[in-house]
Length: 166
Image 1: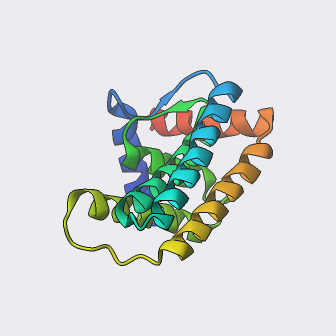
Image 2: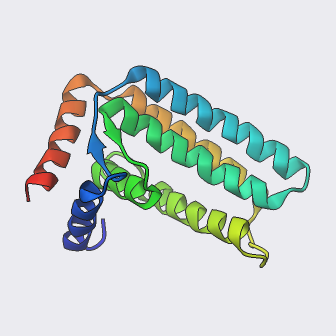
């Protein structure tokens, strides 16, 4: 994570916000539900792409990735309603377990979604490449989720506690 000091400062900010990062009870059921939302978003992305609806395909790509990330966070018991904080805590906790290029793609997909949803300029995205990258991201997330042991969950939660204590 670039600029660890800055990242820790941002994480502390997120931990201090009402809708920011908080520790909750880990939930396998919630993790499964968010993974299902990620899969549904993939379907939406593909349907929109095939219908020539680029903006919504881009948005669905981002949300597919976001829901996959949220699935992992739910499994370890982290709640966060601020997207930037969700991405930040995911990167902080999983930078050693998750390919850096996929974390960069998550951030880029968020920027593309904002461009597509809120501005009238055309977003230049290779839609079919985006679809493949999104599917790869979700698959990689599922792999990480499958490997989470009780011990690893405890370790990840303690890393958040350590940031809170600073």
